[in-house]
Length: 381
Ligand SMILES: Cc1cc2nc3c(=O)[nH]c(=O)nc-3n(C[C@H](O)[C@H](O)[C@H](O)COP(=O)(O)OP(=O)(O)OC[C@H]3O[C@@H](n4cnc5c(N)ncnc54)[C@H](O)[C@@H]3O)c2cc1C
Image (cartoon, rainbow, N blue to C red; front, top):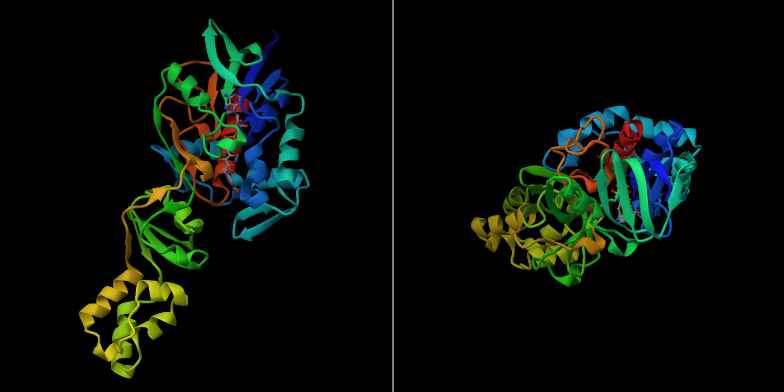
């Protein structure tokens, strides 16, 4: 079997970005992927329009044991570099929110640009990596299609969410084999199941403020048949999917509103007042109280207000890897160089992208991480 300078495990955004740098450096490169086509997550990302970066990408938008690990790679290939790269490839893009960029004509443009830059690397699809070994300076990459040899290996095998897209935990297995620690994996950027709401609320969407472990999240929440989702909840799952406090009316102090109305217009019913603030069905779910405010004690008004401004979720459970956009946790960054992505335990072995214990916030941060870390490994492998 042929020997290569570098073998890359995984043909996603991180693997392709690494390949493009290696090809530019005239290295011989083999990419092996268990799927039948490249970067399948990029293809469906951002609702098919690939939210490829966010100009706010710095360590404060990343999660894991050591979010500061991202700093070097992000400075070597920043979100501005990604935007310039997109422009250089004539990809039409739109800025949907300040600093948050999507492809205008679909993720295919982004994918084609990645493939264009990696042309020169050999890609073997439908090839499942089952193990790697190192003997002297040479790696043997064992696959379902035979063994391949190289001087360096870049593990870009991603997370384990969206299993129908062909995923595996081979990266974690390899890392463990060479002495790396694995931070526990869990699904993130996904909806949560909770018994706190009625499925009749499904479809209602509204802006909320969520407090989760002292982090404040302001974004939209969407009621589902089994619980809650939407960007606010997706982002909360990065911190703690189980417990959070939801403020359904972040701009209104409901207790003050009810007390003031009691003084000015005590004949109004509580539910009528609440319905001016919240969608009717939700207002009725949170407070089905048709009494006049004048007949409602302040302590009861306080209880009603609390349900709206301070709704406790204590039974949240991430819906599962099946529909989580990312895998939280992964290979500990402890024994990996943040400057090169090379293992400090096994020279020549590199880890990039989602397989690492680095998870980005919703908004283009994960693809940016895949690109930045891939770029850095491609410069050093
Ligand atoms: C529905 C969805 C929407 C998303 N939207 C966005 C978005 O808009 N913006 C954003 O920033 N992020 C988004 N993400 C997250 C983002 O797509 C990923 O974090 C990123 O693409 C990860 O890139 P990667 O190269 O590290 O891994 P991957 O893209 O997962 O690539 C890893 C590759 O390795 C292959 N592989 C795994 N095991 C083996 C093996 N044993 N042998 C051979 N090959 C193997 C896999 O088949 C895969 O092709 C989204 C994710 C999903 C699921």
